[in-house]
Length: 427
Image (cartoon, rainbow, N blue to C red; front, side, top):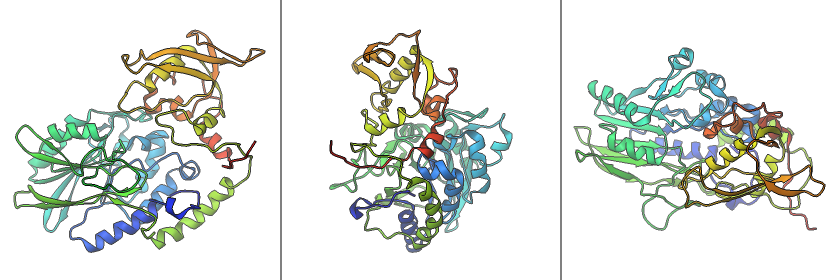
């Protein structure tokens, strides 16, 4: 669900209306279909900023999944922001590794696993959540592999021979679950936004990182399939499994479906989006100002214009050591970089050095100087900086910030008021 209208039809890909259209066609044409949702339904778009869980729940319920797990972004506004969604969503929600002993009301809203039936055969589905999220209150997210194994064993003891793991833990963790998680047949994964695809040429804008399905072999020779279909509703995962009488996979076929602009949008979803979008447009289309350059919003592996703009729009004060720690953390995982977006900072990293010792030069802009200049950062000095509320609250494991001074302007409030016209204006 996007707030903006595509001007170039060739760039209009994905979206929930295409997901629903494709799901409904598959369900009507294939025997014994199972529709699964791998979570992160809450995201930082205007839709979520304005409507929170309401729009998400409303539209997901137009085509309920047979099972849904919980992702890290479901905790973006804490347990209190997730509970209303779980109370109302039609899809059963499962996660086996969230200890809710100290959040009992939250724990009543989902189960560790579930059993469904297709063609007279029972199928167990186990949910699992990444240990990465923050904002879970007094709940505790436990290690994935051992807790999946425990729940899989419980299902096996009940006589379940076909078991699916619905995982929001990322491809590398899924590989470990596949190897050590017990009698699993297939893992339907998410979180790492991994695009899996077999054969050439590929489809869509993403480069495959592994085969679809990716296969891991356990010590006993058992082979476990793993599928994942990138992110942001650009693709719909699609695989057909053939089982023998003992519940073992004998064959499989399928591939992700690229939801290109040629894919028909579901008319029900399109019509029901209109009143919500009208309310959103009243805010989003208000003219505030213009910029001279195109804003690049793809910021994962480098600094970008959109990152500079957002970080310039909020302010708080923190010690220099907190800045240094956050920057080191943002490049600590060389295989999965999430470089922190900054403005008024010059930093040089040496990625050949050990994690948390990769900064070789760090300077900050002296705004109080008569002539602004960059100076070495001092760990004990207090700096006025800008920071998104989600990161400040410890989101994405930026745990160095929560004990520092309070933020002065909430990021979500800023985003709802900061409306930018994207234009290229010559000097």
